[in-house]
Structures are given as C-alpha cells and as structure tokens.
Amino acid sequence: MIERAETLRLAGEFDAAAAVFRDVLDGSDTLGAARHARALGGLGRTLADRLNDTGSALFRLGRLDQAVKRLEEALALRRGLDRVA
Image 1 (cartoon, rainbow, N blue to C red):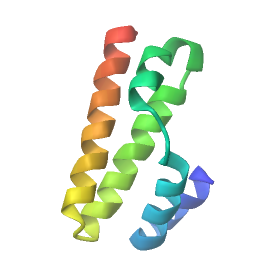
Image 2: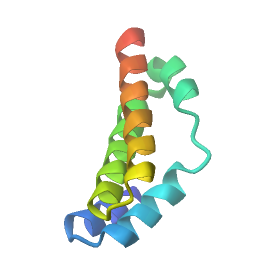
Image 3: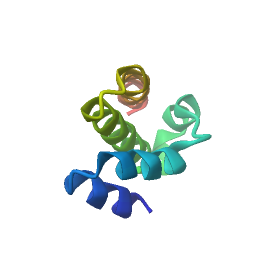
Image 4: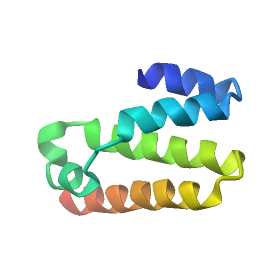
C-alpha cells in the first residue's frame, strides 16, 4: 500500500497519494514508534518518511494546516528515533 502511495506521489497525483498515505498512517502512534524503534528495526524511519511524504503531498495541494501537522509528526518521530539510537 505504501508503494502505491509513493507511485502516486511521484506521478504528481497528490490527492490520491495523500489519501493512501492517510489510510496507512491513520491511528499510528509516533511516540510509541519512537520508544520501540530498536525493536521495530527500520519501521520507525519508514513511518517518519511516510509522514514526511504525506506532508509534502498535502503542501503541494495547498492544504497547509494538514501538511504542517504531518511534517511536525515526522520531525518529532525522527528526533525520537535519534534519541533512542
């Protein structure tokens, strides 16, 4: 599913990409992912990348409030991962 969203994003289909990324990310707990980053392997970084991708797609669509929220989540997760690593 993430691959589909990435394909849509790269094709410039930002509405569709954002919808798929949202489906993947809905209900995710970024703090929980940061706490368990070692156990999750690369999943924490992958989640941060997908949050960032979603934020970028929303930004390009002009949905700035939504974009900022996702980009801030990605940044918080990355910072958490850096502390755990």
